[in-house]
Image 1 (cartoon, rainbow, N blue to C red):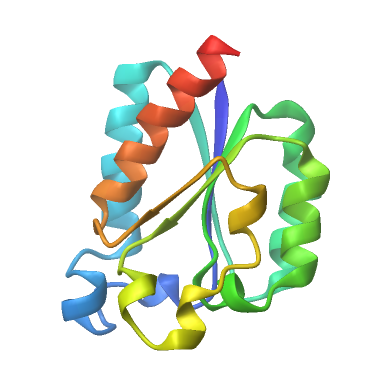
Image 2: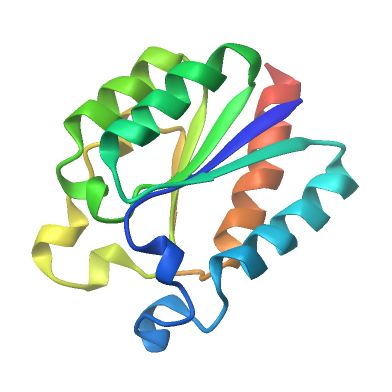
Length: 145
């Protein structure tokens, strides 16, 4: 089983951004935690981060045909990334949307997600643990389909 783990704009600055919202871990530290969990679950994970929507779409187009699912934190693209939404939808893969902060308790524009309706679930406000929960859920979801 292969899962794509995608992080959008500004997530490369984790650890430097507002720690009260995003925690203190850097993206590579979160990826290491995900890798450890993936090994336990016998899942191959492929990580990708970009500040550019088109690069994420290119990554999806290049990797979705040999993958089983997607975990994505779209960052700011959550609210307006229509080409990202289309790329995710075109992949035909089950996906889970993850946000470190609770987007529903922040500014009103943050609560609108253009990918939530094509996701099998959304995990918000649980920090880096959200990725671990998503990985476990997605494995179970794929295994039972």
